[in-house]
Amino acid sequence: MMPGMMRALRSQSAGMLLAAALVVGFVLEQLLTHAGFPGLLTLSAADVRLGRVWQPLTYAVLERDPVGVLFGALVAWSMGRVLELTWGSRRVVAFALSVTALAGGLTVLASFAWGGLLLMRYGGGTVLTSALWLAYGWSWGSRQTNFWGIPVSGNVLAGIGLLFLGLNALQAWSLVPVFPHLLAAALTYAYTRFGSPLGWWNRLRAWRLHRQLRARASHLKVVDGQRGGGRGSDRYLH
Image (cartoon, rainbow, N blue to C red):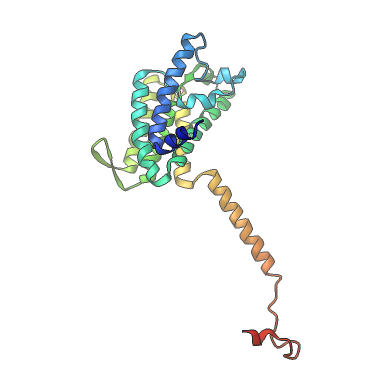
């Protein structure tokens, strides 16, 4: 990639990049479908188990209908733009993609126990935007934000996001259509409340280093400045 293009990408907001990825993903999926490769990038637990192991990654930026793409792009742009003010652009993008991909991978693993998941083909665009929505709400907590002009707290905003998931499950009368969404919601809650696994790993390393330094320091003894009769003592150097 050319240096100029790299600078242009860095200058864009995380929300804008994620919104653009949803549009590009939809266009690419349509082109592959018309070329005779339908469902190549969307997530199907049955396909992954047959060897299409890239799908938990590629489905993250795919939505299956134009309305979903436009709504998802709007949510990704608005929620991602606010989140990056406190998280930074790289963290927002890494969070959105990794949580969505991990939810997809866990869905495939769950299909070994719940065969109904094999029947579904998922687009991860709404999984990604739901994660951003909930992350924004839970990270804001009791502080006031707004739901498209209506003043609400962050926790209430997250509750509205969960309500959307519940209504989708109710419409289908099954958790199968929203299974990766629910996993992403649980992962997002854990992330906003307890931090990322990398953060916990760094804390564990810092704690172990602190213990090692204390253990080494316990073997050290203070040298008496009077020892040796005073001659050669370093007490005159202070």
